[in-house]
Amino acid sequence: QSALTQPASVSGSPGQSITISCTGTSNDVGSHNFVSWYQQHPGKVPQLMIYEGTKRPSGVSNRFSASKSGNTASLTISGLQAEDEADYYCYSCATNYTFVFGGGTKLTVL
Amino acid sequence: QVQLQESGPGLVKPSQTLSLTCTVSGDSISGGFYYWSWIRQPAGKGLEWIGRIHTSGTTIYNPSLESRVTISLDTPKNHFSLMLRSVTAADTAVYYCARDSLWGELDYWGQGTLATVSS
Image 1 (tube, each protein chain N blue to C red):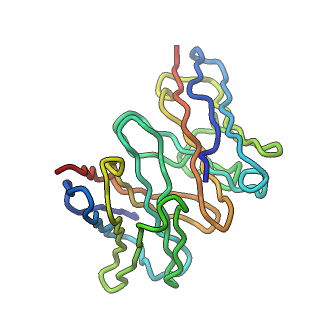
Image 2 (image 1 turned 45 degrees about the horizontal axis):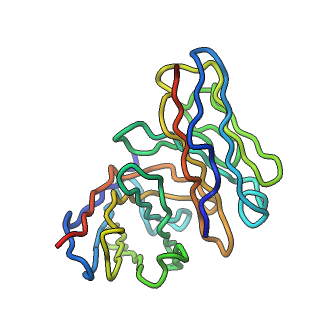
């Protein structure tokens, strides 16, 4: 079971938009619409930001959105703010109802 | 408010068994709707899914750990547990428990507990 592929790092300036990709295969990301995304600040617990592919939990800013095309899911953060600087992980169901995380992406707000 | 709290020894010797418990409050692990999961994170590295258990007792494990892992429920105590056998230094990590849904939605997490494998 291999981790889903995410860029190691992305960066953007305040106010800009960035997109983080999460690439898997037809056996995981490509087989359903239920990828979820997590934000983790240094030393903190991961927090759910997106579930069921595109839905935001209560309390999560609408600056966070997500989509999927084929075997790649994407998280977009618009209107970047300093507080968005964190690590981001995707999470997907895979073969035989196992689950797998992406390798993680470090977002730097310049 | 749902809360999860991991507990267990912080230090385990190589080749021994790591045992952790996750105590749940604000929800019943026997409710039937959710799954209860374990995730770990070595220092400076990414998240790794270990496995999960449903109220029914059904378990699913990461294939890379399956031969060494057991997750179990204790419904009277409203907690679930992780056992990882034959540990090595590579198993040193922060271990998290979390509530999960059928299709993967880790909505509540414990604070995490550091387990160190060392003699």
